[in-house]
Length: 519
Image 1 (cartoon, rainbow, N blue to C red):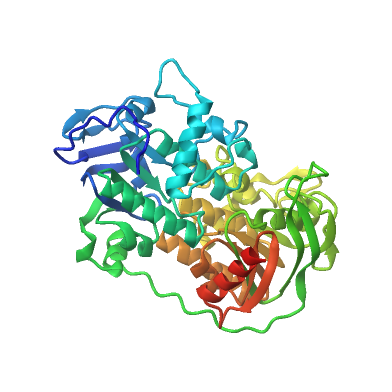
Image 2: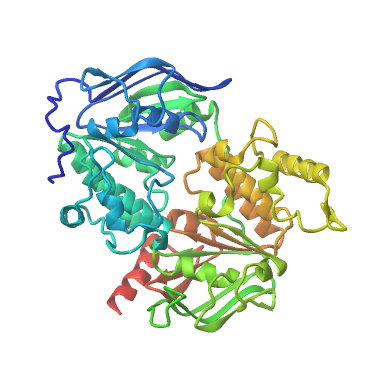
């Protein structure tokens, strides 16, 4: 596979692609990285592992010029380097697909690809970029929609744009931060094959992932960080998954018991004949969801399986009242949701863990207590006679932080400074604090480490066992199979069938998806 030239293709590759020595990074009194050594060879896929907040992303931001280390050194191909700005790292052939995207929402996908901050003066050759993107699509299967605005793309589609952008810039050292978090299993397989081809072509690939099955399927070597320091490193062939987990968390994680049958009650969510346009503002827009029927009862978790772009986003937006459907009906606890606006959804006992917590679920500059109590501030006991009891709100937030194991310096810490796992637990605390009748969880463990993932799963099951209804939407078939009582297969905007989770398999789900293509 031939990739574009970044200007760094002339390196001799006589030594390691990358060597970090005793790298340390502090933020005030907090040490994010301490004396970290990391070496990655050309032609190698190197897994960088650790819990949320272990320092993995900080280390990679140092490598890509977003941060500068307080101590230590970096070598690229045996030569010492210092990156003061990201464009310097880009010029050196280093590229990173960040877990939280770096795209410009109000530009098209093609325009985002064409932006070249490493070039001075800034240039944008749209025709050449389109040709490059088409070549990459032919080689990798990672296709974009060139003329669509990024803000109209789903999370998984935005992640795909980030990956294509990286390849368009011709990076020789490629860093993937949780790249499969929003991909379907088939899309992950394509990406894994791409990583292997890149390594076989002599590139160096760094993979940051919490999914050990994926790590073992593609990586050659590993480095584990725990609390900012190296806890272990070596060939993956010499360790087991349990050993890696022990290195990451400093102990073992108790196995989560399998989902036990429970008695279901009355329908809490009823979707009937739902048609939703892809573009709600256009009368001629094609349907993203057609004739969808769905029921979720109290005391059960219904999983929705399907590849990205199959109508999941439109389904959620119709249920919570953001987009009015063209036809059909949605009822939550017997309340008609056809009026536009989410307040009726919440008033009926609904709650939502959205797909993209950074854009939708939290306000990064606000404190933890403000984010956790956001939905409670308009009603008693936190507000009486139009006045907010700030002290009571903070005390309630601290109680929820303890209950949901939200770890922060204090309730006054800006939530944007916390790790992804703690942010997600804060969202979970807010959404479950009122014991909602219906909880919609969209990709609820995206980008979370093994311990945070286990915590979220247990809370969802606890809510279901207490009589709550849970609609779980995920691109991860293993997650849907393990966490659901019933599974609804959504493909090409239509509900293709329903399966009991106890007897469903990846193959039976895949058959329903394939039959949709054939139809």
